[in-house]
Image (cartoon, rainbow, N blue to C red):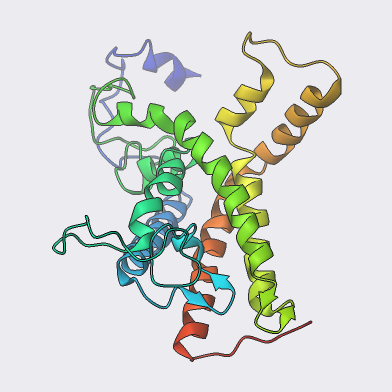
Amino acid sequence: MAEAAAVGAPGDKPKGRRLRVFMETRRKDNWWAPQLLTFVVFSSFIVYATWAAFQGEHYTSGPYLSPFYAPELWGTSHHAWFGPPPSWIPSWVPFTPALLILPFPGGFRFTCYYYRGAYYKAFWADPPSCAVGESRGKSFLGERYFPLVFQNVHRYFMYAAVVFIFLLSYDVLLATQFDDGFGIGVGTIIMFVNVCLLASYTFGCHSLRHLIGGGKDALPKGGLGAACYDGCSKLNTKHQLFAWCSLFSVALTDVYIRLCSMGVITDIRII
């Protein structure tokens, strides 16, 4: 109580003790461990996704298409919607099918409410953790000014993310169409699980929950609206879990298809 009273109003200098300096804390637990894990895992995903997006090869195997490249608008595989890359793209411009579509799901994930808190702590140390000294001192601009004002476009990326769930679901359907007809392989199941995790993450989005809740800040009562809101709310309670599970699943799906394409492993047909 004495320490809480000494803090006072925001911006006031605490009485009876000095201002907490960067990384100063009285905590005895390993508060830094979650931040370090987030930094390592998230950085690894960014590096791998960037490398995979610029590869432009080994992103298909039979009926399978990597989620990093879906939908393939222009490309050299049979999944391409509009055929080979258009001639109007200059030869000096780095081009792969992934570079056209990854900004949309990537923007949705990087502006996600959960991920903001995760990488603010892990990458910027702002704040490093609860009850730990911050690096920025007294200044706090929030998300109203550049560059953090960009975070407010999350709701618009959400619309694109919902569309991608249906596109990826269609790719799962195509993943059952082998040369000899209908079938289910290990890759089909991996792609299906990936879509389920991505859908659980996307449909549990805070912005989508607010949108379903109604435009007049009044929750829907009964019927389809209430059912959708309740379902979205249940997914939202596990938003952190689905955020990380879907991050792993989308990368592992690409790895599996890439290894099959390179001949490192062979896909097993179940049906």
